[in-house]
Image (tube, rainbow, N blue to C red; front, side, top):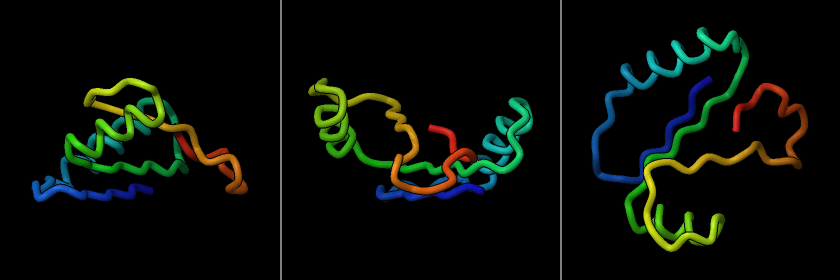
Length: 78
């Protein structure tokens, strides 16, 4: 399953993203996983990087582990 949250004004090629995620899951033998992708702007990225990593600058990628309070997270990648 793929969830995409685009908070920017940029258009995304959803088909390409789906193909990339599918190829990744196939390559690493993951069948029933949830992939959640958030596309955010530089200001929001900087704030998240500062709040969660203590680094006050923007970055290309932030990744988070699954939320611990959600039951049955064994099928989620962080």
